[in-house]
Image (cartoon, rainbow, N blue to C red):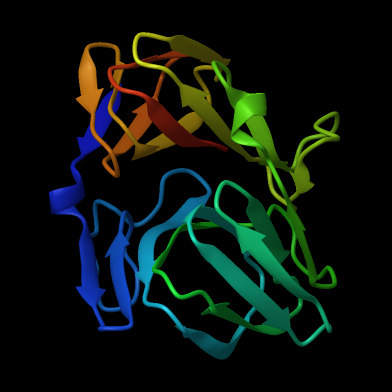
Length: 232
């Protein structure tokens, strides 16, 4: 089953410094049919103006994954972590028992990110943060695990939940498969380009909520950059 969620149907708000679109209910946007997808709770499509960003604010008991599409994001938190994550790379913050952080676009250009929140499997752990480069060439023609809560995904950033965040870059006409399993849920968004899944066209920044699929097969209609969450 594929529930297509076109970009134009998403909630959101333009705050000037931040133009945000919400795949799921968030802030002042509430749609009872789009509250979560399995343990995937938030997928925000954010465009952050140059030299602006999110000032320090708290989180707890949430796995927060930031996928940078264009530009760069600069992170600082109450644990003393500081880091700059560039386009194509990923950062993960496990909020745990509580952390304050800021996320700023310190660049002279817009920064575009996907911000993904996944509900943790267990609570009460200390907060942590990490970031890692994932060269697009290494995920050419295939899905690569970027963040994972499963044993064995040693090259991925760790998250404390039964989920994976994956990325792929496909040339037009190329196909990639992912072994999902019928008991799992997937949510897929092309960061760029259009793809086809089981006869359904998914354009750039559209969302596709997928379930009851053993093997997920994605074919690129254009050169495409894809982000996928495999959720419990």
